[in-house]
Image 1 (tube, rainbow, N blue to C red):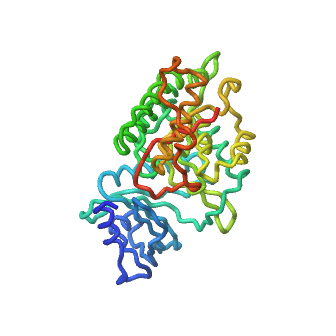
Image 2: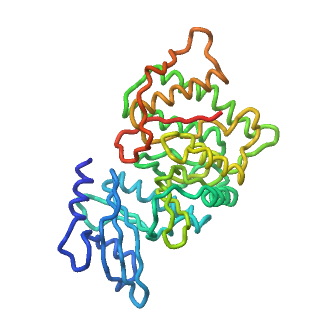
Image 3: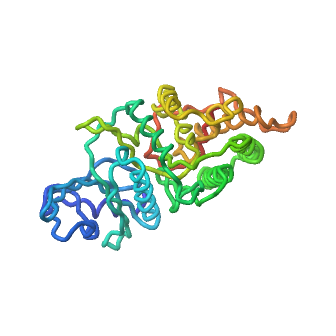
Length: 368
């Protein structure tokens, strides 16, 4: 944990408050509401490895009492996180208001040490049970069909983050070019944070130079087109909730950008998520089928990048998946490829995805 985050946690804790709770509400948070708004209660809520979160109960002047979810993070990286999440959730809410808690605002704390930023949204009481596949996939498919990129291109207008990791999402007219840029950014971060691995570098370069263009360019051949669709971009069961009062499913913690819609559910292949169960993918495909040519690309390859890792095991999984695709679409000349990993060499992978880890590595999950 960084010193700045610990400092933010320390100044947030306060048990001597003029309202119920244990969370100090910064003046600039309250300033986002009409003058005369008062705090009924403020409590720390939830856990995170890189943010501080709280639940606010407010009384608006001449109006009802309302509840809000508050997230904050320190330093310039905190600004990127909060600005990105506010814009991602706002864009999602624009196209699917029944799928996303309504975002309220974002801004900078009045406190100067540490410098910190915050994001506010509607608070909804939710359970963390697995989402109903039919409801989730129906809503997702509708979002993907109806959303329209403001530029007609792939990407997003601000940097968004998958977990704590900033993504490279500036606009590109070509899906192939955008995806390669996204993937190269992840690869660069992986080597920077987890060390250089020559054999993995060899596979990644061949994948980018030979495999990805063949597979993704096929989506726009023979008169076919790809519609840029708004995706959540980090959708696993931990970023969903089911409302206690009406059973409505909501998604949150978005890393949104405009993409080929199948990237959303391609992420579900990662077997360390419970949403990897085939029922979810099959249900989605009933509402929004796979892009052609199906005979060449079944469920469109390589659509899982930027995942928080569990260290060596995820890198090895990516290594094996990439080698599988290279063997199928662009095999190395005899004797020139790096060694393949044997099952006995593979590190164990936790059955549960851990979103509280500090390290980041590459996880490229592919389904062919």
